[in-house]
Length: 334
Image (cartoon, rainbow, N blue to C red):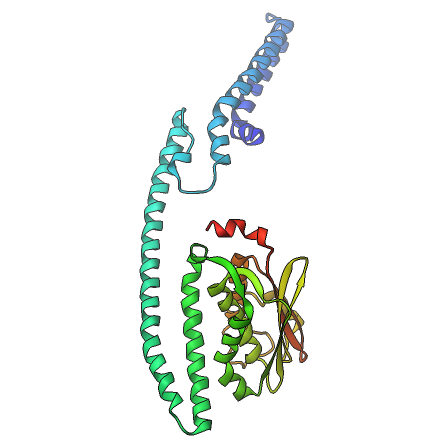
């Protein structure tokens, strides 16, 4: 702050020093002027000028120090009170701009809420014919046709669920309900949902859970696991998925392993980026690049440590390490 203050008044300081130097030069050249008296005067005025600068620094920077320390938000009450004319100009300008930004933010929030409500209403409306379609598919006698229809139905169902949760995600923290969740029935339900897809791809699922109870939000952890399971099935072919759980230091870790194509090492830094699919498999039309992105967003809010380990052509393992009970104190208050 001192450097900025001195740079702001650099021209004035140079002018003062130049005037002092000119006075000393005149006293040196003009014999009628006592040089010692002029030198004494210059020293006195220099000390007074430095004292003046120190006082003005304290007065003139008080407003800007408070402004700098102020948190970056649109709260007008957090603006420091101006006392000098130029400070009042800054305060008035900031007040007008903040009021304009608050109005714009409020308008955008209303538009976002309206768009979200419309999208969610549309998704719920689509679910009705989708449910009817599933009942019709159950009546199809041709087994091969039935399996193909169930697979396409499942794809639509998963995409709608993904879209629904994605729209709810900005308000996820207000929607959390932390409780003891048994992972086994949750996993069995998800496996049953993916059954037709697994059968079509020749993928089996081996379930081996040593510990099943964790503290989390049932709805959102289901969505998180669904993203990892669908990724595992999507990139597997005629192989088994292995789902297991371990416990260490009072923390449960759920492992979902596949023997699919794996992830190229150069893609690893970007696997959680929105919309990123692969730099190697450009021809994969089924990849949306949203699964791991959404999974990482949900895991962060749930305080679940999500780790991905993979080797090309050998498979991928996704691990979810759930937090200890005491780490959920703040989540329970949401």
